[in-house]
Length: 183
Ligand code: SME
Image (tube, rainbow, N blue to C red):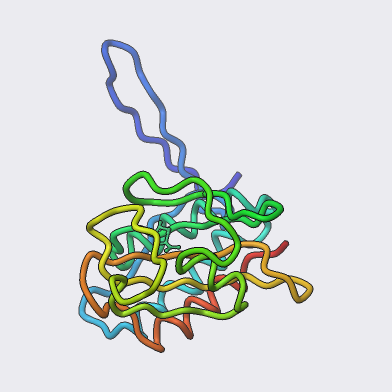
């Protein structure tokens, strides 16, 4: 292997070796410019997500890294996936507080985005009829369905603890990002 760095760390009398490779398929740190626009942050994140995901065929692993990267880059309150299993959405990889495990077709923001097969932007969750409050702190939300062969197979759901957090810019880039996942 090329480009190997080995760090030695003392741990209760024994030694642990952390091995970092700079091959594209091994963990890397994210680099998101701090003083940049939302658009610039997404533009910086996308190639890094591509390199994390490329060559890894496991969908759950890729969803997990995508949720972690979005949380780290933007500090969202909750970011995660729901997968379609029969007539329900089942909680997938996420970052944030514990969340509802199952959501029925047509229910809440997620079930509605599934039914309508479109991205939903909710500036104020209290104004969305049937919104499912997994956390009482959630104030606004965006849900992006992942469509494969004309059917929704999963959703990306992001919650904010502030009103009116998400815009058409988020919708545009999050649709691009979720399209990196292959089913
Ligand atoms: N608020 C969502 C439920 C999922 S959580 O926000 C994580 C909804 O109404 O479908």
